[in-house]
Length: 288
Image 1 (cartoon, rainbow, N blue to C red):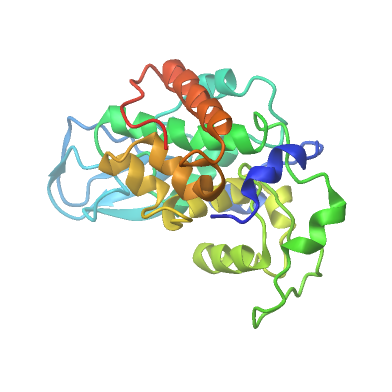
Image 2 (cartoon, rainbow, N blue to C red):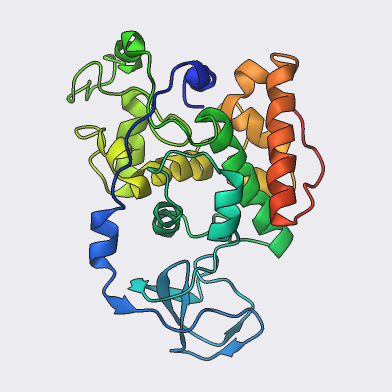
């Protein structure tokens, strides 16, 4: 769990809009191949685009999502393609009508390559439910994506754990909450940065400057961290444990098992609203 995550709603601030990820878009020089189609048979060497990246088949394949199985080799980012993410830009706009301009749909698309199995595993309904669950927690923690960083600067120093051998090289007050889930603490910046190939320990400000990096930190937490739960949120949604288990993984120590039933109910209501926008059934086991 990202420590003190539930305190985000009371400690967030508006920030001006930022430009889309220069690093991501600058590398996207290849033209996108035709979009992958689940019903098409692809032979070895066949090339498709998926989530804004080109992929090449290693052998015969059909109905195996690029990025979700080893049959596909990642050929890198591409331009000129059509987004085939389970959530369209129009649906994203409908879910977050009053979001801060910093949180772009393209930023989310650019971040997907970091965890290609996210919202890309299982049936179409499973994929939609996972995306809805992820965006539900982003909505809850950043108040409808209105906030980019914590506003209570008096508490910034608390997010530095000097007991770690690497300390807080960016300064004791540099590791406050940022991004869709208010990503915070020096040890999380270190771990996520190592996983993503980014020096977030020394440059934590990237999370509030680059939309793609902001989304990547949220995806890192979603796909790799159990928190107080027994599984990652990704595994909970693709394995059938249900939305309630994602609450436990993200903030269960404070909310689940009667800790804060009103907060749990609010998350469930938001999840049901977002799945309705996507036209997907919410599934079972919604509470924790």
